[in-house]
Length: 560
Image (cartoon, rainbow, N blue to C red; front, side):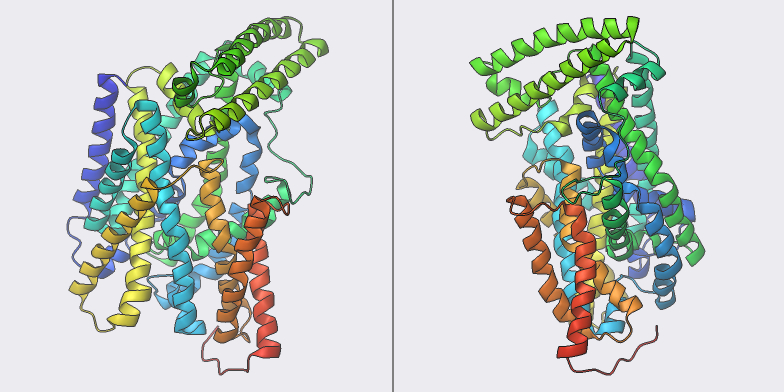
């Protein structure tokens, strides 16, 4: 990066943190620190979007589209439906009870043990995810920019811990407004610059992308082994989003900051309305990067460590020579396609593209065999490679600020939620029922610090999954279905009591983890999105069976 890029990056980061601290400088009570029902619907909506849109979104999603096309957008098709369901049936219960966390309702419904176990499941999965949201931008930036990975993890983590400890949930909401502004400006600039760099108009560009199999947003084939299709989206995706937005404290805490039930509902619906177009736009940016590199030669693997480590390797040199020859053939084929646009020209381009995919696959295999310590899957490096090599000074700094802003926004929400759940559902409820407001506030800040250190620890010791954005969703899917099942029983099955629900969690959660590893080691074919409906429905079924045939009826003292 050039001097101007560093100035832009530092200015944006300093402004966001300073703004958050200044806006929350008068927070003196635990209630305001943890919740503070003061936000308008648009602040709630932006905060919800910013919490979900981590750095992983802007690093991984364009690379996902570059390699696999638009199919990933189906993952979000169930989100608007989930937002409507939550707005009608879940939000009113939370606001009526005036809860700090989603899990407080579970004690009222099932008893303390179920509340504690469910909150612990949340803490486990969200603690792991918080580490990934720090690790994701750190490993990419350290690799591309030459930053020390350890120090990058620590710096991002410490900055977020600092302002989250000072201002709590309001610091998170206030900084996320600015972070989302930076993200939108940066992504629109990147989109414009890519279009400007294409040697053909958009209509011809998207026609070319379609011929090469990249414009494939919807698949109607029902296949449990297919990660993204319309069925996994509306079944698995809807269950995932119901659990994420309805039971994950990092999201629940965002809409509980609304001034009223109406503001919270509007914030959720705002997210449901704009999230799918936002993800489509980011995926479309990845398609444009793909089109750009049809005319501009890209590396055979976008991870720069590959070239550094294997530059003297004979097989590496041979693959690159093949790739150079293929790129020359592709330029001739593209010229022929632009002039004639014949079926023969299209077939020729498709064959060349297939051979390029084979070369990229061979390169990944070579990296795995000869340099196993380097990440062979380069999806997460595609967009940052384009940013650093093809965008002008200043814009590069702004887009690095986009990545760091997204990392900070999602991580701050997660730390805030982890601290709130720890202090409300575990510490105060079990060890300090008569705690003063001052001590409550102090404990909330200490738990924020503790979870910040835990997140940094996981970030420092993390390893890459196949794709970072999938990693977060996989971790969530291991727990979200079961947690959603608990809340579904609470809301919909009044005759099922606490003991049946508690034992169902203990039985079903290991089954879901087992199913994931059976798929991971190829004993079964079951993509992770299906773990969400399976976990939810299996928990409901198990609780029903236990309540009917095994566990004695208990007195239920609650109001539905």
